[in-house]
Structure formats: structure tokens, C-alpha cells
Image (cartoon, rainbow, N blue to C red):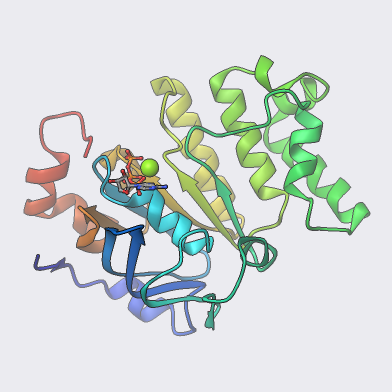
Length: 258
Ligand SMILES: Nc1ncnc2c1ncn2[C@@H]1O[C@H](COP(=O)(O)OP(=O)(O)OP(=O)(O)O)[C@@H](O)[C@H]1O
Ligand SMILES: [Mg+2]
């Protein structure tokens, strides 16, 4: 498959340092089945990047590769320039990567507060954790109100906030988000995307997996499109939105879904 690459002047001129995360020609297998084919992808400090693609195109596997859950059989993953080949997932997390997983996956029978505390489990700076917790409660006031309730009692939108709050409590420099709009009403999707933009504007780089291409591109700086495990299109958001191939394959049909 030939990659359709849109020239991207913004990140080439703005980012002269090395990327926060860089995948270079990465192949991933589950057993004998190859799911990622020579993936190359970069996220720089402060960027908001979307990773688009249909079902089973390899989006979640790409995030698992960044977290060190999947290990490349070929290619390299660099975190702040350091090869993560030998790192365990907990080491990757302690070096500043955090995830809001697909379907949120909060701990249903732990309280909101306990769920949030889990996000800080690799930290031991009690006073700073307390301050961060307050910041999370300011960002999501409903979580303060519900702090002693079990996770399972929260609505889908509230669980999404909890999953995000938990991810932020590890103080990530890179936040991975796997389909944040999934299962949310249009109003909550809008709210969710506003929160992602806010978190990003406060300095956290975000790599967001989405099937809702038009929504994702409306807030992203750049995007990558995966098809059956290969990056087929990449470029900055505005150019992706206006690109005829994107329009036809991913943004047509009026609903904007990939
Ligand atoms: N643990 C696993 N073991 C074996 N195969 C897997 C595993 N996880 C994913 N796969 C397969 O890898 C391929 C890519 O899956 P992945 O979850 O990365 O796709 P995705 O783009 O996130 O899809 P979706 O939009 O449905 O979440 C699929 O064919 C899937 O069946
Ligand atoms: Mg997925």
C-alpha cells in the first residue's frame, strides 16, 4: 500500500527537539498474526494528534505498543529518544505515558476517590498528589460530589471523566486516549472533546484514537489514518479535512465516521 503523505510544515518547523514518542517502522504480531505493518508515527511535546481508522485497523494495538504491552518484532519505539524495547509497561507509565483505555475500564466497585488514587499508584509525593486531586475535582466538579460513591454508580459520561482524571493523576506528558467518544451522547461527546482540548492546552500531549474522524480532526493538530495495520494517510488536521482521498474514504457520507 502506498502511503499518501500530506506535507506538514507546522510540526516540521515548530518541533526541532526529538519527539516525546516515536514509532519507527514497527511490526506487531499476535502469535503468528501480523496486525501492524511498518508503522511510523511521532508525537511531539504539547501536540494533539489523532489516530483514525476503521474497526480492527490496529489503533488500539498501536497504543498498546507505545505502552510496551505489545513488543515490536521489527522496528523501534522511542520514548523521549530512549528505546523502550526492554521497558515494562509500569516503567513506560512512570516515564510519563498514561492511558484512558477503550470503554474506560474504571474499577466498578471502588469509590471514585479510590479509582483516582489508583492513577497515582506509582507516585509517593503525597502533598503533590493531593493538589493534583484538587485540580482534577476543579476540572470535573461532579467527581468531587460523587467522590465516595462506587464507580459503577456513575453515568457513562461521568465514568469517562473518572477514567481521564485517573489517567491525569500520573502526571503524564503524553496522554493516550482510546475512542473517548464511544458510547457517549452527542452532548457528552462535545463536552469530552472540550476537556481533551483543555488538558492539551495545559501542556499535556494527547494521542487520541477515534473512529469519529471529523470530530477528532476538528480539535487535532495532526492525524494518522490506519488501514489494516498500515498508515495510509498522514498530515496536519486542516489538510486532512480538505484532502480529496480523506473526504471520499473517511469523511464522506455525512456522518464523518471512518
Ligand atoms: N490480544 C489479541 N490477540 C489476538 N489478536 C488480537 C488481540 N488484540 C487485537 N487483535 C487483533 O488485532 C487486530 C487489530 O486490533 P485492534 O484492537 O488494534 O484494532 P482497533 O483499530 O483498535 O479496532 P476497534 O476500532 O474495533 O477497537 C484485529 O484483527 C484484532 O482482532
Ligand atoms: Mg480499538
